[in-house]
Image (cartoon, rainbow, N blue to C red; front, side):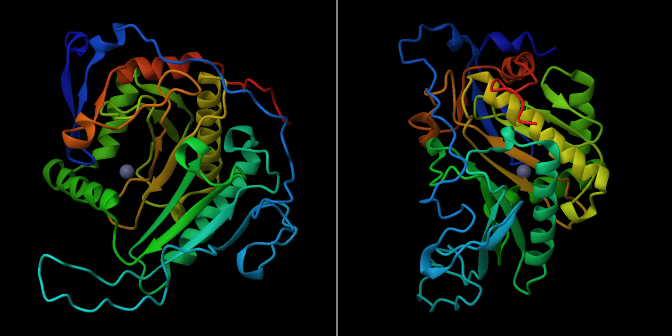
Amino acid sequence: MTSQCNAFPHRRYNPLRGDWVLVSPHRTQRPWQGETGKTETAAPVHYDPKCYLCPGNERAGGHRNPQYASVFAFDNDYAALLPDAPAPAGTGSPLLRAEQERGRCRVLCFHPDHSLTLARMTVPEIETVVEAWTAQYVELSAQPFTQHVQIFENRGAMMGASNPHPHCQIWATEHVPDEPAAERVNLKLWRETHGRGLLADYVALEVQQEERIVCQNGEFLAVVPYWAVWPFETLVLARQPLRELPEFSAVQRRALADILSQLTIRYDNLFETSFPYTMGFHQGPGLEQHFHAHFYPPLLRSATVKKFMVGFEMLGMPQRDILPEDAAARLREVSATHHLGSRA
Ligand code: ZN
């Protein structure tokens, strides 16, 4: 049904955010004269004495990390949000609006080994991280000002990650930020209009069509969404209408660890590099919520060639060349085993 339009430019609607992406599949025929090529991989350093996240090392402000053996969480020494930030003074103009934004920023180290990434960790190791995410989510949600808890990982220097040590950040905010707020509006509207969940309906559609599924297990599937903006963007969806991490059973926590392992291994294998991305979870206690993860990787055609969001994309709308269906097929076709072999 879609193949007819797939040879020509068209635009696709993102029902989660309520916006559009321009798809230009005919452009993938154009000759490419840029660089290709892998990044060379340096020998892995398991402990870096200069890393502020490695066990036993000193951080800013005289803090010292314990000799942690699995996961380790602490309040960010350079937090973007503060729990006691006061309300800003009035400006006297409706054009100059500011609001109080209390919050807390935490760092969670996934593993003591400096050289690892989710793709190189075992499923039981990732399961420990899922348990830590759950505990942090519960703790930060319980603060009186918290309206949203955002767990996210910035992976790789290309994404601006300042430290390769495997870790994520968890920010709790006094307001629901723009991305989940836009989703919340559309999820609510869909439920009011259709009497069902938008993402539950989307899971059913993707299971039926199959062509955008990258990998799956009994509880989750990873798809390149129909409306993907980044070349190899994926959406990890719970099959059941789970709303937030604290609702997960042990089986579902294990399954989340498994799907994150499967997906990040395929990402690394695509260009045989440690694949950069920003990923994070959208979840919440609201009836309209449906737990999911977004992966936004910048790479386009090799380990070094990234997509730029410039020109028409800054002034008009996002645009992509490779079809989401073709991106899903490429990720499906690579090996399910990491190209560097198994660590176990
Ligand atoms: Zn989302």
